[in-house]
Length: 290
Ligand SMILES: Nc1ncnc2c1ncn2[C@@H]1O[C@H](COP(=O)(O)OP(=O)(O)O)[C@@H](O)[C@H]1O
Ligand SMILES: [Mg+2]
Image (cartoon, rainbow, N blue to C red; front, side, top):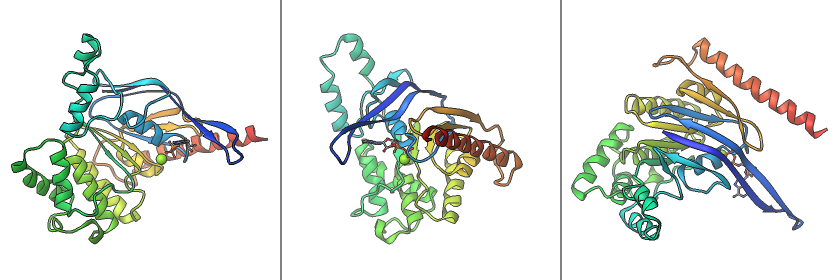
């Protein structure tokens, strides 16, 4: 269970004329995401989706509020390697016994994040990319290669193991990033516009693959997207953010059984509903600026 409680994120900024200014990217967002759910966050550009997702991952700290995952507070970037884990433990060893007991076996390596710009190492082959991630997570050497090959095959990259990212197409690179994230078998997968940079046809294929990989694993997925069709097709629930400052505008359950059809009229109706919310917000903003 992911629980975000009253998350606010404020940025201090300096204007070009050197006057101080501020942006409230996310305002008082509370959201609970039960295990195994596929939840999408949608909303206009700049409404704080990425900021909120990074706060969930512990990649940035909220100005106010806190995030809890399975009853444990997310304090900062979760350690990704044994070395980082040791440093983390050392850092918190002077806390009270109670606080220590909260950290003792935590945090587990159970979050993986997938970004839009396929974060893969260009100097490593596909196989090395996945195996290296497994190494960072402490998987013994003997198992790494097998596991890496298995996950590459699952995302349709069997036969491309020895290729470098530059030799792969955009869609294949994103598959590699997905294989890398999934290979560590995280309980929670956070994705920030993962398919935004690939062409429409590849995007649909990757969406199908994601559904196949996710189905029945009990993993939680939080997907940030500005593609409403994608959100409607994939999710159990859609959280609609309002324009700046980002607040939760609406939560829309998608109770359509899987496998779904893209042209399902129920899905189109939901899409229209979300678009209507966007339009309403845009008009509201226009009224304000008069
Ligand atoms: N590091 C930062 N410094 C200042 N402003 C930021 C920073 N990160 C994000 N913002 C601002 O916060 C708002 C939300 O950004 P973001 O979370 O990237 O939105 P989204 O992902 O929904 O497009 C934007 O107005 C953006 O300019
Ligand atoms: Mg973003």
